[in-house]
Image (tube, rainbow, N blue to C red):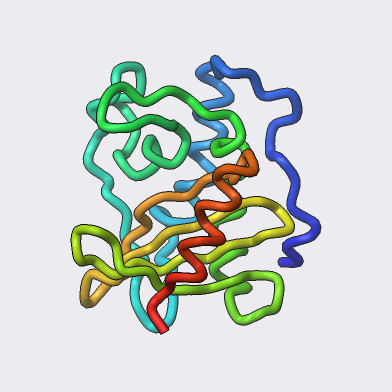
Amino acid sequence: MDLFNLDDHIPNLGIDPSSEHLEELFQLFKADFIDNVFYFDGCRVKIDVANSKEEGFETYPHTFVKIITRGDKGKRNFDKKRANKIHWIKPILENKDTQDVTCFQFLEADGKIRDYFWFKEGNFLVVMEKITPNYMIISCFHIDDARNQKYYEDKYTKRVK
């Protein structure tokens, strides 16, 4: 799939999604990563399918909820920009070897090396971690301001070489 043909999935998605919209987004994610095995660099892409503990999202898998919400250690809130691009994850990974996706590894403060796949033109970033023998989706998000743009540009500059 051509990355430049990707758009938001639900036009005018609000900050408080209907149950129908939430289910529609989940079905996209489910088709890409639960119903069909997806291999990336020879490794199976795994997600945490345990039910989320986030209030209002308890019937959905943890990884799905982490991708469609935003927040730190405390309560997470629905993030329409992340959620509306949930169908971008797989095409970005499939196009990692093109000039459209900037790929790099970064040594995190906890000592883990994570892989970053940045579709700069679409301001969307996928973060994965190899947990042998699989790859895990750690997070995905829309880079929505100049501060975040600079933060990830700095990470790229300090990447593992």
